Length: 350
Figure (cartoon, rainbow, N blue to C red):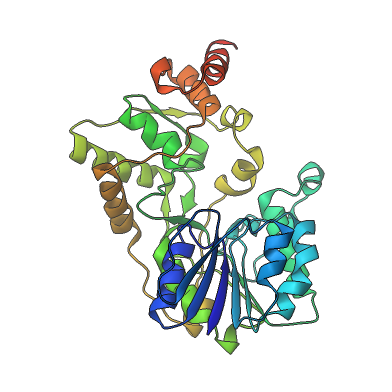
């Protein structure tokens, strides 16, 4: 098969393209970086949001198109007819953040926020969970059924280790620099599931080219469940074992303060929900044994600690966390005069 992958260089995309390559498929991957191609794995440098670049790729047909891109709903509406007309199967990555709160394990038929939420202010936005649901509607309402919707939930690997809403740059960076991890208790108590990125890739690889997946929605999510508090304790144990020091933690009563410096919708309409999944639908089509969550998180954190590599640090969030913890970052950590001034302003002003 010939497979075009939009944005296939992340936690799920990277292992997916290598699985497809190793299976003998011709794989074409868009990337903004210059990455050498290798035999049947072809990296196409360009901005997939650029219309000229997008149009140049869709001059011919593919057996499958896998789309990891994050669109606004109107943006995808414009592109969708072209995408569906130039492939036998369009695999669209949505998100399990589309689901509303549920007292029972989530299935692919569980109510979505777009349909169940009564918050008119939120519904007027095109926030990530709502945009994904609206984009799903575009597929479901199309005249074609050559699409498959994938709803992953929180994924992790050696470079992505989440804690509540935090990426590693928000909690682990603080811990390794001797500052306190600030964790809202209302998030810490919630149930969640985390899935190893390559596991999602392996499941999706089995759905590509599978006619039973056409016109269907799947969430390839590890069915294991734990609380964010338990995940935090696991992280602390690994760090203490590795460094000899146990990071400091401050539990604050609720996430109201955090919502002032973070996406409040992500907190209110996802991380304050218990997320428990029933993954039986996808397992009926392509049964898969997911990596044990605790063992996987432990292994990935240990690997990262061997050679830490940080992406951008959110210094507005750092200022808030330092204010809550009564701490202060070293000015030498902060790049750029404007960022230093901004940090100091948010750290010391009420």
